Image 1: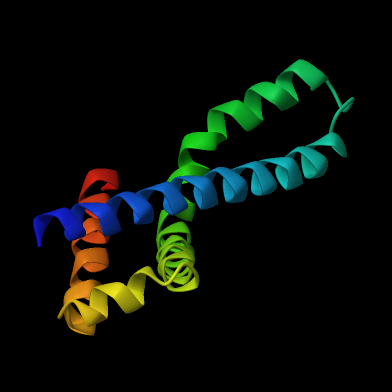
Image 2: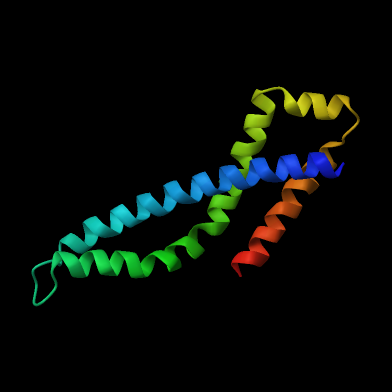
Length: 115
């Protein structure tokens, strides 16, 4: 069972990292566009805009973690289902609750790690 837990967990983490990268990039770009309106007012130049975006990125990552975890788990389980791996797990006697517990345990570790 530990091998399957680790396998499901790794798939979840991979999808989570991909989703958080996409979300943070998207929201950073949107913030960049919003900040470009203020550029040129006073002493606020392009370098200051990029510094602001870079310095607010850690907060943006923390804000996106719950959404990325949800989307990452849905995508990971969808990929497992698409390749027929969930069917094989169910045929080998693994219950739906056990599969969900594997994702939940990895997600809980992720939430503890991010605070």
